[in-house]
Length: 153
Image 1 (cartoon, helix red, strand yellow):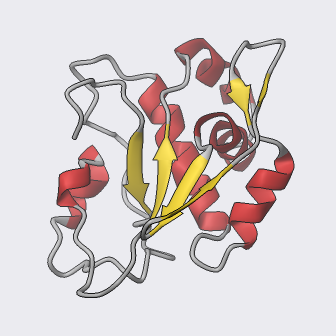
Image 2 (tube, rainbow, N blue to C red):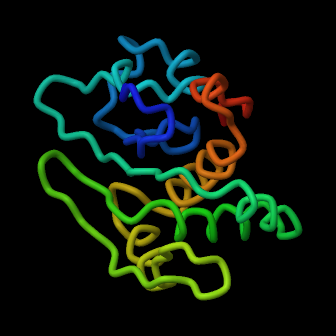
């Protein structure tokens, strides 16, 4: 975990519907990881390559504006605004981002969201999970940084 509470974080897909198959769920402190997203708690199976998503902290005002959307739409937009890099093992895949004129943030195109949703190691659940993390991360203070309130699932 970075000393900077607002540094981007690499997260593993750990939702109960489609966790990363490379994770050693039995060896991990699952609930603690889900609550904190502390990277040091991620444990891979021997010889397996983790599939990770980098989530950047969004401005809280941007995330608050997303509350008017349905949860899935909110999480897809948050994903496009906060997750511009994923990696599988040592292979990094990056989005081509543009600056959103209205909000001043970098945002990936819908084709990036589709690319990750269609990727066999990620899929739509990864989009929703990372977007949910991004929305929650945006609202946390430095003291709250490692305490996500949403339940696993």
